[in-house]
Length: 195
Image (cartoon, rainbow, N blue to C red):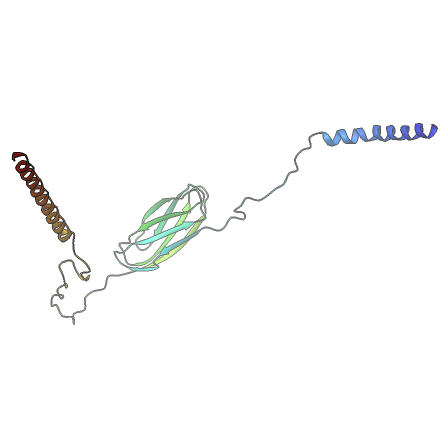
């Protein structure tokens, strides 16, 4: 009996000692501070491309930029002699933009895009060639006539006129046959009721 009391006293003592530890563990703990970098960290440097990289005067080039701030206005300066007025583009939510430009001067054009808020900048060059001049040794005879009225493409089919004509003729024949059938039945029924 004494041994039972000793075991019970030890059990109660352990339980009393464990209660504060369990109570402290049950309290809400502050969340650990984890510093996770954003998905685009470190930020990629901005970039600007031009397609094509060389063209003839009067043709258009496509400028594409990325790595700028989301929904940011981007000023694009054009350095050529003389200096041209800047272009303005607006990025999408991912910091991308695309804009078309048709140069009116030949020479090397340097485009520099700068984000108004982010201050990020990128540059690209475009070589604009003058329009080729006809050589004096070329013949001034008129160019050969295209093989058909539409230009140089070959004729590969017919227009819708022929099928429409055939379809209209078939509808007309069907209408005449139906009227003849109705007239024949009326005559047949009229002849049968008279006898």
